[in-house]
Length: 195
Image 1: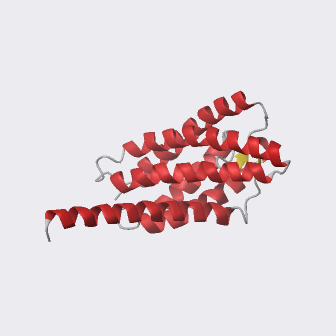
Image 2: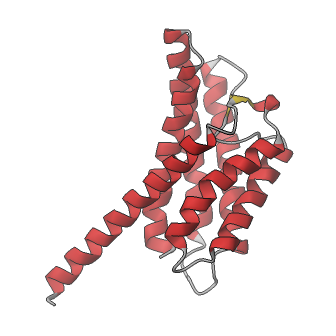
Image 3: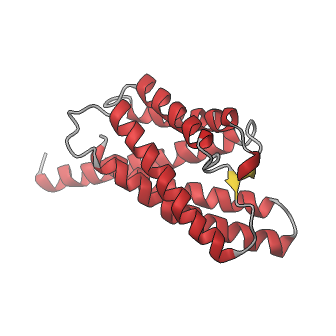
């Protein structure tokens, strides 16, 4: 096999992994909507966050199974989603802001997304990702950045759609956009540092 065809094969498998990751993450989010009721941050319970985390972690663990123990991935994700909800950040990815004031939504999205993403990345890195993956520490910061960017974008879009349509569905679409952004950013990173 030539070097060029080997590089093309690696590029193809990398793109396939990223698309699979996005599909798994978004599929998990859509399945979670059958179980977890989207609501405002104070109304979200720890159990809902844990169930939502499981819905995301299960398909992701299937993709990572060659390098990361599926059980460790699922348990670390379940644990941290529960903790994030317990400390008052809310069911990140399933809860919407209680305010319609856009600057406050943006600011709180950056803060809660950054903190929640940092906690998520730290938990998965320390509890699930094997130390043999030398650059896996980057996962911590990628998660934090992904959520700090995605949450304010999705939240802002959600309030615009809700105000235009007068339907709460606008907020759910905003959350879906949040998950798409997170899935793309973490998928690109996972392909580089977790496989």
